[in-house]
Length: 70
Image (cartoon, rainbow, N blue to C red; front, top):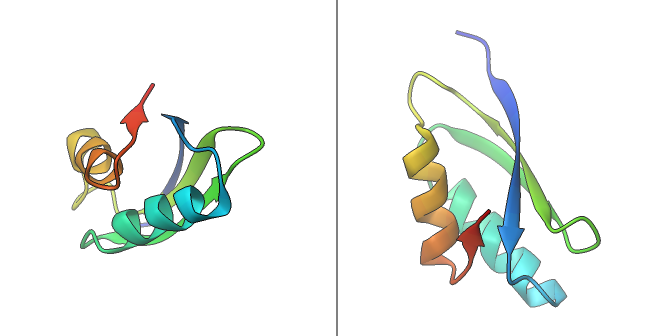
């Protein structure tokens, strides 16, 4: 199955370290190939396999990094 892209709004990022934490937490999830967070837009663009990764998996990874999904 082809990968999908999803934009997720993230609450609480305020510095480059926050961006890095969100990206690392998401890319640790099996099935997520890349995550590119934007401090300016308060979001993250995720490239993932939807057959392996649920919205809950994404939210859990963001929360594990210390932030919330809007």
